[in-house]
Length: 372
Image (tube, rainbow, N blue to C red; front, side):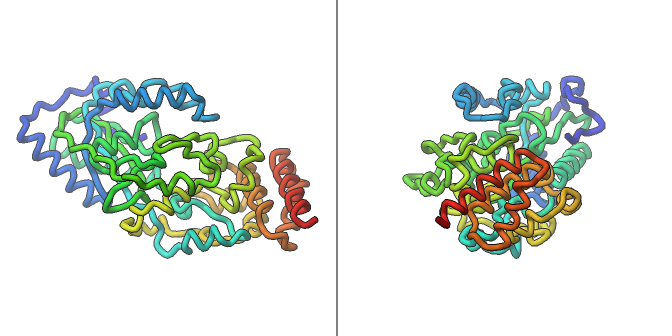
């Protein structure tokens, strides 16, 4: 987490600058110009009242839909009460950064080629966390040049933060029926980041929803994780299964996973608003190591050392080699029964990892059943 020289975790130890309403309005305009000049795609300012979202979150947790993500329950209401997480917070500056990678092989072509590995488009290049945190830190430092002392904390998936409701309240988009944030002029292919701040800046108008009668995302989900409009069961979501789940992937979801080995974009790929999505100008988000159209068998052949080296600075590295091979084993089980696929799985059943062996054995059994 980034923080400035005038702050610690508790902003209550930093005196709140005394500014007039006109000064705060002028500062808000300057902040937005600064954020755009730093490369963010959009910026807005939100208040910290998330009472309605808190009730929805607690109900979702009570239903157990967070699966193994126990940290979501452990943090309690810190997620929905910014001033509890960081005392002294009165506003949240929310930013967006487009990530659709320039030059990547079309997603639908990769999904239609079962011998290829599909990686969620956000993870084809370098990890976005550090890039966005550094820019948020620079934004805070620029604000400090205008007003000091200043209390702030920057977050990019680094703490219990309700980033989508906050972004909605900051006018950056609405949560669609697939629960992702959508902007009517930019689609949904973007990252979010937040700057908690102790300045009572004027807030922006929250975004209104524009999904209308469209339900394209619901049937598009391979594992039926979108159980109803605006409701997601993470335990069924391929992003959860391939990234957050640490153990064995339930067999009922393995065939529907197809060739998706890290994350899933299907609900966004069918969203009509994404015809307005912008290609990212960030070179770091462009595909590395041919991940936009790599052969499953070639990826499975990587050693653990190759995995660690090639995914240095990549979000994929955090799942570790064992889960990487687990995911590939499932995809190989759904691939055509070619010699290279079967050879990969024959190696998988002899893996030192019981988790990989179990999934490779399932995959080989799937091939045998199809070829009877």
